[in-house]
Image (tube, rainbow, N blue to C red; front, side, top):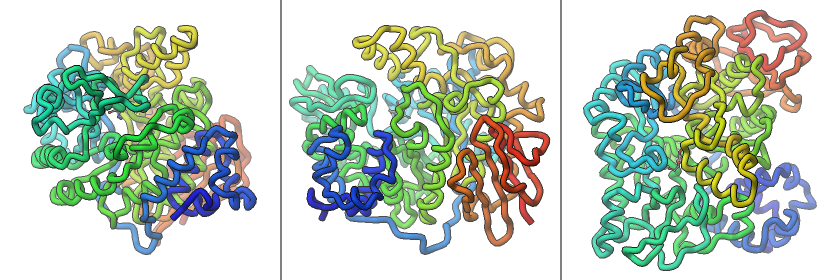
Amino acid sequence: MLTKKSRIKDVYANPIGRDIIDRVLLQMNISKKAVNNPIIGSLRLKVLPKLLKSQLDEGFVDTLLTLLNTEHETAKGNDEMILKAWWKEAVFYQIYTRSFKDSNGDGIGDLQGIISKLDYIKELGIDAIWLSPIYDSPNDDNGYDIRDYHKIMAEFGTMEDFNQLLTEVHNRDMKLIMDLVVNHTSDEHKWYQKAIQEPNSKYGDYYIFKDQPNNWTSFFSGSAWNYVEERGQYALHLFSKKQIDLNWENETLRQEIHDMIKWWLEKGIDGFRLDVINYISKRSGLPEANESIGKLMEYKGVEHYFYGPRLHEYLHDMKEKVFIPYNAFSVGETPGIGMEMSKLLTADYRKELDMVFSFDHLEMPGRTRFDDYHYDLNYLKSFMINWMENYGEHCQPSLFFENHDNPRMISKINSERQYRNVLGKLLAVIQLTLRGTPFIYQGQELGMINQNFQSIEELRDVESLNLYDELCNTMKKEEAFSKILAGSRDHARTPMQWNNQQYAGFSTGKPWIMMDEDYKICNVETQFQDENSILRFFQNLITLRKEHRVIYYGEVLFINQKEKDLFAYYRKDGTETLYIEINLSSSNKKRTKYPEGIRLLSNYAEDSSSFLRPYEASIWKYN
Ligand code: NOJ
């Protein structure tokens, strides 16, 4: 058992301790080397607050100890071969339906729109599709606030459309996974309506109510509690005011969720992406949040639910009862979860989840999504090296740079127009040649970039709008707007750019969200005709991936790790060796050695000789 007298190095030797300390260091932009320093390592835990520039108080140490002492497991080492599975070989494509393709001219993407583009997705080389929520919803958070799990959102179509979509996806030999949002429902869900109107019915305990709110805050600004007049109590909402947190402690509720999942699996879908699934177990008693952790993480209360006491139990139960019988795949969205916790959530022998999405690579140390800064790819390199070398054979990494919750990656790294094409391809090389399962977000295959929003009125996302209002209390409107622009999720939610016609061929009607003029130069139709486009590069790279199975299960061997701006690695198995060589900077970079073998694919047409050009990324095959 770890106590306040334990030494920092002992805490760091504990896998969960390491995750938490790493996370804190990341947030504070302090190098991990600090912990490996023998003097610092031998200090006792109780001095940590002082060491961390007094930014963390005593309560932080208590919270850390609670977390450490509730997790008794550590992940196994690499003792076996990697088990094979379809989802370890697949390339996934995420569709945000609202913005993908509209079939009926109402300016909102829909299921028939998706069906009309399945051939495109297949041609790109995609094996599996992840659909963001398409269930009935009042759309406070674009479908992540579900009103009815068994119904399709009217704007998106009908259940017949869905059945057709599933058949058509399967006819093309692709798989379909759905979004599963079970941390919360909409306040318009009948369970919630019953819970507030008939508190003594079985629904009365389906949500988290409290007589007095605690100090937790919502991810979408303000307190995490709504006053509910009907009950004279407060209801917890970690996200918007209309997304109320379910009470997983209630067994009947868990059973209901299992039944609902089975209902979808009976239809033949192939699995789920589980929305903020690591938040489902809240520490009992819902203790007050530690203020200093709140300040550091920007949200209060996270320490009491991001890795809750019954999380493993709930996941294991769900896997055994629901996922395994249907042979269904699961990938959990798990913000704040580090590598060691991820191992415990996904190791094959533990039977909880198949994979997770962790997010620590999307922002640089000390930065958050709403900071305006340039992302240095050397950080991505160090992150990837760590995961590739240490995640282990029992776990499968997910590889992604974009989704519907983040601005476009190219814009984050370098928004100079001249680099857009090479940079888009460079990211594709990293994503499709490391070990792991790639998830491509719609439009990423075109190199889509952040939109040129001009005013707050053009934004639609509840997170951006709430944050803007909050910021306006303390800063000028222009300043608040520019902060929102840096991180708004709407950058990724503008319509997919199909052609250079009106509304980019997305719809015949005015789209639900604005789009700038970028579609005139960046769209599917133009890129398909251009051999050098990002789209064709993705297509070729996915084909290459399928031809070189070493990418699925082979070893990853990094070389010259210390050399700044160079990201170089081998993929090796008993039959072949690939060499990947990437210049992470926008300057020329001297090569120490010219690669042997043949160049299979590169983001530059002509080969260079003694130096690598800006963002040059190539794949070589060795004999
Ligand atoms: C994560 C989803 O990806 C995001 O879009 C949503 O707002 C929150 N979870 C709440 O469901």
